[in-house]
Length: 257
Length: 301
Image (tube, rainbow over all chains, first blue to last red; front, top):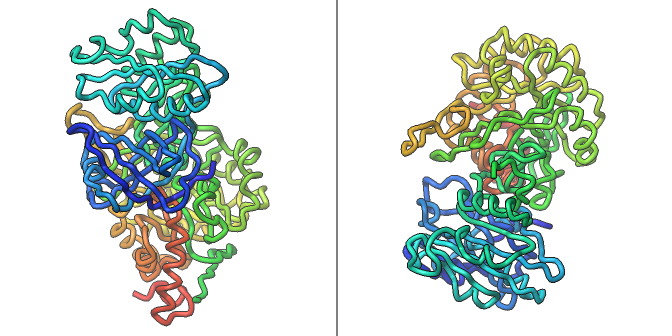
């Protein structure tokens, strides 16, 4: 897929919660083709401590409005600066990067498991599944009900199950404790979230014999497979998360699950 | 339009802008963003005789105006390069230069000899300055005797343009450059990264997997410029300058310090088309200042 450097225009920055913003971007041209699970490297201007671009996963692509959505957790100076963007500002993006989730095939039953801000790419994945006539099932986990992001958007495309660590919404506990996993069988799980959560999901999947792919977020510099900084150990040796991932089938990883 | 062509030994560059090893892959990764044949040369990823897995993750730490890396020369080895990568890059219409590394003078020489046989590779850049590998690498580049031994072995095995990349982690870089010139190198490029460290204060441990890494980016530019100036005054072979170059103005500074050509490294990560922009910016600067060639400003200070 051809990659571009684009100065996208900020349409809106919506604060979802004190730690999360949804940045909606557009372009005067039709936005390039982008796949669920791919990501964007954004340049952060006006933050002296932010030297490198920041990789942000593609949350949603609204083709009718020609919008690209990025869901950003404000964790450091760079992401805080992104949260301060205003409508009309430009955001320099390199996109689309990496390989996305495996597209749904036939009437496959796919479970999309997300944790925290890691739910971001699952919205676009679920939307693309729905477009093909396959209803996705979302299992979304967070610390508290306030950290559950964009639930109304997820509900537009499929069934949504929820866990919170404090029990303030859905079932109490972690995603891997949810009763859904005992009640239903899925053909594939695609997951994105904190590494401990993804490892727990990978453990469940390998024990249950369910195909599973995870979206990694190793620290990276270039985003295009040139610097070899974001490597993950795999059955094929060190691979770049940016270029060979970020989505990997767990069979390719050397995770002890 | 000023003339930007320049010669490094027998190597003719259409313009003095190249991309630095380890920051531009094999060039192909950047083909969507810029015309690869628009720059004077592409120095591809460090290549060794045998495949190397490199160091463990984490290999990178962001710093003020720069970054540390300890990639550790991850590459699939020279045979893989010759069989699988060379066919993909040999027809790119610019100088495709291979950065060669090793753990002994014999290793370096054998790797260089394999690349000597590739018609489409007109030059190598000898990496005697990688700070991220235990065996060899920078160990050769920090003493005159070590540097001489590697260059001597490679010079006997390699017949095209030989560029040697210098380490800044030394007391007197000019002395090393003179030793390399004496062994028949055609050019020196400098600087490789400066050895540094980052600490994760919450975990009370060093950030990078091997503890230290090489610092690059605008943070190192003043150091690089000073060393280019020193080396350009010490040797008669052409000097290639690199270290934090991110704009045409930066490049002009390096020319004035004595560099005949420059390499762009870390800036490629921030803007994948930066090298073309620097080329165009050099041209505009020369035009607006009444110079007909960038050679008119090399070493003017």
